[in-house]
Length: 310
Image (tube, rainbow, N blue to C red; front, top):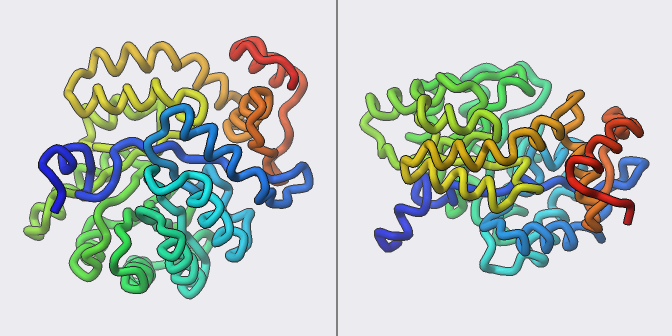
């Protein structure tokens, strides 16, 4: 049993309220660079990240084969050591591939799985429930939070389907959501069904997290800009969980301009990898069709972050 203090420091009973979503290193031809994984993990752990989300959207998981993703999980765990919490992004067009990924994540001693729904396929609510329940059943001892990313997939998890999954899969302990008003809907449906309300409701949006915590009942963040602002974003979440919105807003104000610059022109991943590379971290490049930054974009980032070529 977890101590009361440990329970207060988790969401969904099992997950850290703050983790950093890590990029995956590719070379300029878009080939996975397994030899670079340890360097990125070590950098983020040294920067103070208490947990890492490996192979999520930010990790460009759909640029990787199933075998490469399984290798990525293992390499991340080997580099992080046992003390750092690691969450594995799992999603696939075929349920059997998602099951294979989940079993691999469990074998690599991942502390949890972020289960995304199938990309591309226009699945029904029934299909989505069956997929999530099948993957959860394959790894019953591994806690899972679902990833309802309706901006990237032709599927939007209904609250009633979320309840159905929770009832059938006790290791599903939350959801990461991109639409603000969905979280109160999920919470209401869970309450109405009489289920445990100790669930994780994660955001993946650094810029929206203040409003999501204060107005929309979110309780955790997997941070993308936390790769560059690890301490700051960790503090934002801590202050929000303590109810000190003003302090959280003050910390966010310090990083908001940098976060906006990273996202400029829809080039967030390229920008983060650029800054990390300039700092000597082997973050690699992005896969085409994501275009390299222009010289002008690079110059603006270098000026803002005080970078020079390494």
